Length: 396
Ligand SMILES: C[S@@+](CC[C@H](N)C(=O)[O-])C[C@H]1O[C@@H](n2cnc3c(N)ncnc32)[C@H](O)[C@@H]1O
Image (cartoon, rainbow, N blue to C red):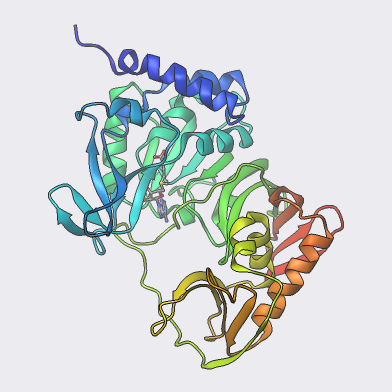
């Protein structure tokens, strides 16, 4: 008799569940039981691990379960990248590629944290956006029963593979190849008690709110440009979604409309350098403090945070840039760490300094100290829960 997948996985699952519970990611017996019931390796028979090759290039090296010692790696608390954008992927050698990941099996502790935040109850119907490997859909099936689970992915091939793997361990949830930003593809006025998204969106799509029962919850990663984060929102009868950023930290790949690839971004030419001056906010301050980056995203909606390399000196900087070509940058190393250089409007760095002052005066609040709301007219606002200070991110 061949060993079943769950028998193979059992010793590894026991260790993983214990570790996720110790870390505070699994918080309830129901989710401990669900995690213990799903063999992750069924959903991730091969994956890519990043390494630097002998030419100093960061590449994705293909790993197979069949390789010696690999099974144990699937049960570690790591994200496993499972697909690369074919439009950017370049084969580097027989088993390695460069390229941008388009699908992965999410970090188990992040998945557990989000599933706990989702606060499901027996009988709840759940929609997952981003089926990927199908592992999270399997966890939902184990917790709620397959009939209660709906999941969509923009990539039809991923859906087919996930369907086969789910079925191989006895689960047949409702899966659909579709752009999940439009919710679940159905003509009916179909409603879910919970929506969980494992790809990020710039704000909560109207369709998710429309497909959620009043009183239901949405857990998703909102990408605000410079930074983003997980929000847990309640939908009300007027079709608002309001709540707050969660203590569960983590980010997801962006939702895309094309199954294969990400849209190419047009980059506005940088404005000419306009000045240099001392500043009290360094690159280290921005890199070290996630809640501060989130606050910067509130102050500078639509701006981006990138690494910039100076063509002539090779100096690496942390750079904020806006769609009008304005930019401001601070070096990552050297003896001018407290100097900002900018082009276009000087306002970007003034906003950074104002945000830094406010954040320190407010005792450095964490992300869960900020509320988030999307109104029925599309207006999006965030606010500091203790004192109500508000930032309007998107007008109606
Ligand atoms: C991090 S992976 C999901 C992990 C998955 N939940 C699992 O357990 O393996 C993100 C997934 O979102 C999918 N995705 C990206 N854009 C999407 C969209 N517009 N609608 C639905 N799925 C999308 C990607 O194809 C990818 O499979």
